[in-house]
Amino acid sequence: MTLLAGVRKGARSVAWYLKGVLGEDAYAKYVAHHAAACGTDAAGVGRAPHPLMTEREFWRDQTDRQDKNPQGRCC
Image (cartoon, rainbow, N blue to C red; front, side, top):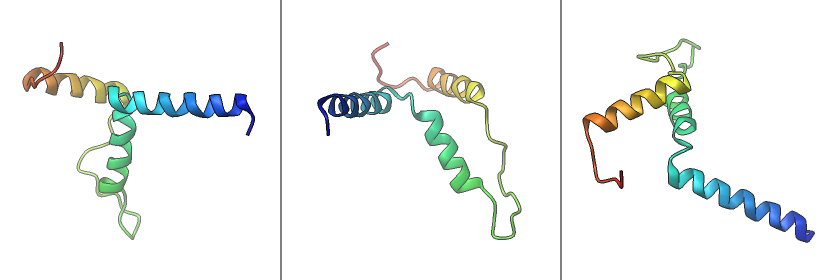
């Protein structure tokens, strides 16, 4: 592994960590959860109680829930 490849790998690791800490990966986690919990059954029939939200709808819902139930946060 060259020095440049090592630096790139380190930078990607730091970016991945920061996205997790700051919550930027919340929508990706929601999509994965929705696919696992609300996907299709063995016959291929969908069993989702609600359709998958778009990313914009997800973040709007997230913000609304935080405003209704404020918890300890810096701002």
